[in-house]
Image 1 (cartoon, rainbow over the protein chains, first blue to last red):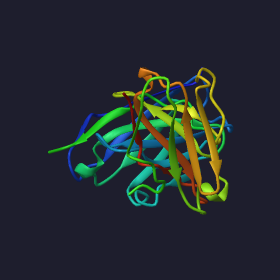
Image 2 (spheres, rainbow over the protein chains, first blue to last red):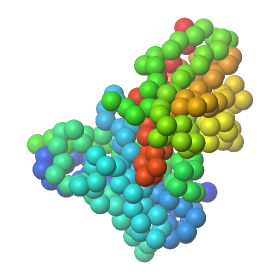
Image 3 (spheres, one colour):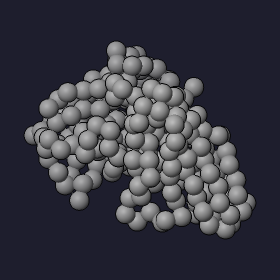
Image 4 (cartoon, rainbow over the protein chains, first blue to last red):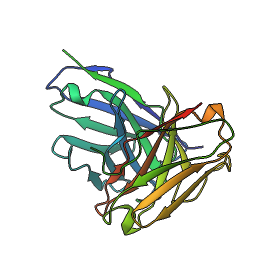
Length: 120
Length: 110
């Protein structure tokens, strides 16, 4: 059964880089049948797509975040990585990862999410 | 400002039906891209409720259904129950293919 679990530091200082990991179990992330997406949700607000990475390493990034976002795969650890640089308080959010069988297919399952707070 | 437009809130009494609309444009829903719907309970991750416009994942009650026409989609919930009280989000794609979301609708069961 495919499962995803996000992890990373819960607190990041302004101007620093946020780094998160999404550990995948139940399937190899190098499996060409999956796309892997990152989504975030600021407290009390709606959902925002950050980007998607394919098993080949091809990425699709949100236009509003693409200058600060880097998505990657670590096939040896079977996890995805998200790096967001130059963070501000506006980047405080719960960060989720999700799996898709095709680029426009249903995102399922999602991880439980991890809260990242940007504060000095 | 969300790309897809949803009403901020809807309400209904137990047993009644409610419809949540999701309006986009010709570059997303109107272009034929899939629309997905999520239910989010407080403190939980979004749960996929409807995928590809009208399909229910295994385990989702048939009280939940989806439709799409033109630039808009709808989530219909019949036989409202107290546990349906949650936030609901629609999601589609543009041609990049970026994900686009609605701003979310809070459902209150009276």
